[in-house]
Amino acid sequence: MNRAAIVTGATKGIGRGVFKSLAGLGVDVATVYHKDQEAAFRFEKEAKEYGINYHIESLDVCNFSKLDGFVERVIGKLGRIDYLVNNVGYDDFNMLYNIPFEEWKKSQDIILNAPVYLSKLVLPTMRSQKFGRIINIGASSKDYYKGAAGIGAFGVHKAALAVFTKTLALEEISYGITVNMVAPGSTKDAGSNPEEKRIPISRIPIGRRVEIDEVVDAIMYFLSDNTNSVTGQFIGVNGGLST
Image (cartoon, helix red, strand yellow):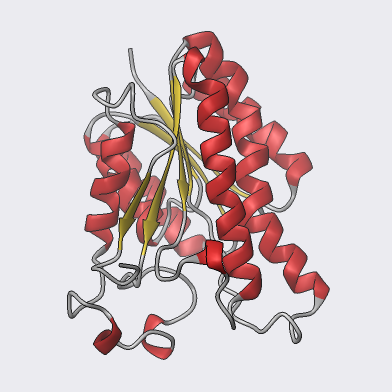
């Protein structure tokens, strides 16, 4: 039996690292990408080299009506969905006073609403299998529950995603489905907003930025078959930045 995964944003950054780790284990992978056609071609090439079945579509995760069809096609092609990694993010660092409401809504749709919508789409399949793993990508550079000035939309929506993770975990564990969060800190070569412009290394206790592979290892732990009783949990991979 081949396992199958949906990893949003699997063509670059942390998502690509997860894709390669899963593909190395023989897991079939489906993903969506937004604009980078070159990265999409690379995903297809690498998937063929790993010898896995795959599915990739150009799709904006904010276009919720099209996500239904995407998940249906993934099930039709791969036969099942065992893992969902909600990896697509959105960096908007503004004071709440200054952020246009449309930007607030876009941040909410990408960071919070897309993971909620995709989770609801895959749950019927996971419930029927009596097995599933859902991983949400948080952020651990700040304590968002206390509020963090200057990153209003990002912080509020990441905090809400953490509460969603814990809530869904409690609701789905009886069906064999676990829901957890991996929260990177300042990660090298990940995200759309250059970390060098926002967080100086001098503020990071470990003295360097987190490597993508370190974040991927935490995600793979939650995806493993040895974590049936681990749910609603949070791993911060941040070099001590939020300690």
